[in-house]
Each structure stands twice: as C-alpha cells, then as structure tokens.
Image (cartoon, rainbow, N blue to C red; front, side):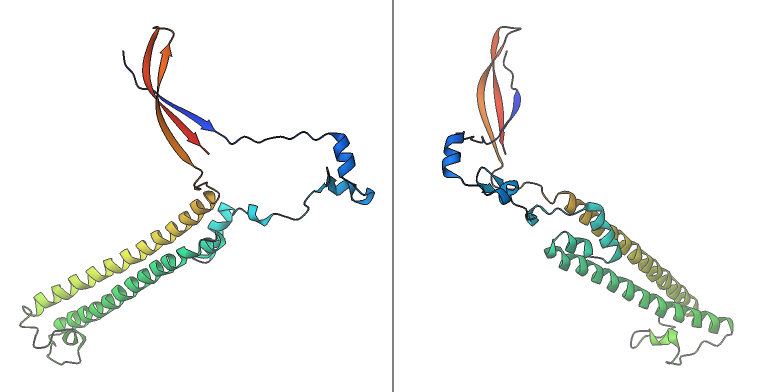
Length: 224
C-alpha cells in the first residue's frame, strides 16, 4: 500500500551560548560602583528606546483615515499608496461632478419643455434650454416631435440622476476600502517577508508500525 503524507516541520536557528568563568571576568572586566546598575558582565545595558521596533496601531490608522483620507496610509508609512488613494478620490469627484452637471442640464430642459407644452408655447427660440442642447442642424420636429422629445429629455434626466447617485455610492465604497486597507496594512506591518523564509519538499520513507509496512511520503520543511 502506497500513501503520500505531508509533514510540516519548523527549523529555527540555534543560539550558541558561551560560558565565561568568573575568574576571567574578574581579570578582564572592571566595573565601577556607580555604573554597576547599568553594567552586565562588563557590557552596558542599553537605556535608549529602540525606535526600529515601532509598530502601528490598526485602530488608530482607521480613525486617522476616517478623519482625513490617506492619513491612515501616512501613519502606516505606506507613502507609495497616496497617489492611488488620492487618484481614486479625484476620479470619483470627477464622475460625481460630470453626472450632476448633465443631470441639471437635462432637468432644466425637460422642465421648460414640459411647461411650454402645457401652455402651447413651444418655440424654436435658441435661447430656450431645450433648444440649446440640440445638436447643430437638429430641431424638435426632427427629434420626433414635442411629445417624443419630452420623453427623451425625461429619460436622459433620469439616467444622469441615477449615474450621479451611483457615483456617490461608489465614492463611499472607495472611502471604506481605504479604511480597510489602512487597518490590514497596520495588522500586517511586521509580517515577515524576508529572504530567510524557505520551503523545502523532500521524499522519505515512513514505517507504519500498525500495518508493519513502509510507505512513501513528502516532508515539508519550513525554515524561518
């Protein structure tokens, strides 16, 4: 019977310990009485803070990002993400502005045409809003008449209104994603991605005492 097994083992680096005799320490190391509290076997104990051990707080990164978009990424020292964050917000702002402008244009044209139609006062005056948006060479009659043109303006008004609201919703989603990114980035700040990580796969024989048989297996060795 042949079976394949997966075994995971962790290999850690060994730390060598050297034993120093008290006699050699007494001969080679002089410790002053005033510095005795700061000395250990002739070596001073560091009292300064090691700032290389700084680690961001995930919730603080979220609150900063909620206060000012992109501030969470700055706090996490992920400066390369700032063009992505602000570029995304710039695109969302442009989409909202463009769709809102189109909505206002078609809303005004539809409203004016609807009022003039009710009053039987529809004219070819180029200053009227519903005539200003016509392409050059086009007239209301060429657009299918007053009733058809009124329905067309209403449809475009509703379309750009929907696009504007959708752009606002997408902006809110993008804003939430920047907060999620700040939180996850802070959580994985000290995640080890160094070159010391390695994964070795090697075949070996495994003896099963229950069935008194040998089987082939794969050994997974993770070094970190």
